Every structure is written in C-alpha cells, then in structure tokens.
Image (tube, rainbow, N blue to C red; front, top):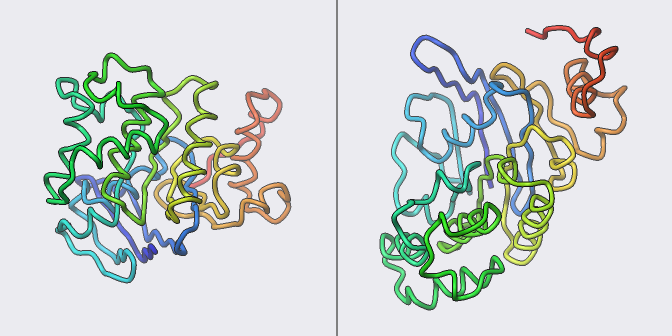
Amino acid sequence: MLEIANLNVRFGNTPVLNDVGLDVPRKASFGLVGESGSGKSTVLRTICGLVEDWDGTIAVDGRALDDRRDLAFYRSTQMVFQDPYGSLHPRHTIHRILSEPVKVHRLGDTEARVAAALEQVGLDATFRFRYPHQLSGGQRQRVAIARALILEPRLVLLDEPTSALDVSIQAEILNLLQELRERLGLTYVMVSHDLAVVAHMCETVAIMNRGRVVETVATDALGDTQTLSPYSRQLLVASKGYNRAAVDQFVDFE
C-alpha cells in the first residue's frame, strides 16, 4: 500500500529525514517509533503533502506521488492528527466539520454520510450540532477519526492519536481503531513514542533516530532484545520508565 525509498527532507539548511525507506503491505498496521525529533511525524506530513520540500520516492497503492496531491490521493489517504482540539475548527459544528470533505469531493448524501460516520466511531446524532469545545478529548478524537474515514480511504496515517488523551480514554480509542481496521480493511501507519501502544496495534515497527530508520522489525521480536540494534535496545529500556542506573549507561547515538 505504501512504498518509500530514499526520502530526504530539509528544513532550511537542516536535514530532517535522511534516506528513509518503508514498505507497508495492504491492510497492515505499521508503526514508527523513536525519540522526539527523530522525524516520525515528518514522514507522515510528507506523505500527505504538508511538507513540500522533499526528494525521493513515495508511492501509495502503486501510484508514485509528486509535489502536488490531487483529490484522488485524499480519497485514498487520510491523516488523524495528535491534537484533536487543534485539528478541528473551533467555530464549526461537528456536522459542518464532517460534511466539508463530502462536499469538496462531491460525494452526495451528506446527511446520511455524516450520520453513518458518527455512528461508526460510537457517537450518536446528538453530537452533530455541538462544537469541539463542548466535547471531551476522547469525543473530539472520535470526530477526527470520523472525518478521516468519511471519505472511505484505504490508507490512514495516525500521528500519535492517543498521546493527548487520558490513559483511561487511550485504550478506548486504540480499541476503536483496531475494530475499524479489521472491519474496513484499512492500512495504518502509526507514529508513537509509546512502544507498548505500537506493540499492541502494529505487526511491524520501524525504529527511527535522527531522521534515519535504524531498523525495521516485527513487533513480536521486540521481546528478544539480543537481536536488536544497540539503539533499539536502549529505546526499549527507556520506554519502561525512569531508571537512574540504566540512564547512567545510556550513550548518544549519532
């Protein structure tokens, strides 16, 4: 579903991504993990067209992308952002937020599509004419997921979709995403700094450091630390919580 080769991104004179390569099969769930600033979110933003200055190869469903993204691309590929409050227009009702992509793509049956999208993410019709500030964080993220799915995409990019939510709500959203993927046959690329989330959601994970993919492994292999690179082993130790003795042994990987 997604093939990336030799992807490079620079912000001004600063290199952000260096020769990134990914291969995501159809209907798979693929994770991207790494420290803050490792380039995970930049990969997703480049795929969906929010980063314009890049070179390399990106192909979605066998179709190579250039600097412009047409409507057909956005029918097939959608993104759910980290902050649901920041990604929803504060002065638009939920109905307007969900109906806008339907109108842009001229799909018709707006009322029925909006109602179905809300039902799909576990929200009833009473939410249609509320505003984002009237919803909880979990409800806002459900709306963001509904907005992504209303165009019936095949590839969904998830940029830390639960990190802004309470722990109790995170599990609900992750279970919802799992159920939607299985029911709709979606392909996920999920960015997270939480290895436990990635291990739960994804079959394969690419570990990034300083704009490069260090290695790509099956999530089942994360338990066998001896087969991992030194950086990946250190990241796994860090993910288990603060340990002064362990931190004192950390090294800075270039």
